[in-house]
Image (cartoon, rainbow, N blue to C red):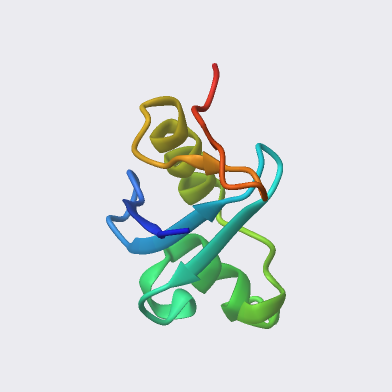
Length: 86
């Protein structure tokens, strides 16, 4: 499977995304999340560890939009590509 690049519509941070199913999303940050993302940076400043912050709401919305628009394909384990639904 090939990762798709997605930019956060809030801060512009770019990540690589793979989807194996609708509920499963693999996100690979290309920069330090605690520096690049204001939401994660605020939580780290409040004492959380960046690696334990489950997600950024704005980035999650950006990824969901990319799936709906077909820019991120959902690939089942058998290799079949699906398209996101709204």
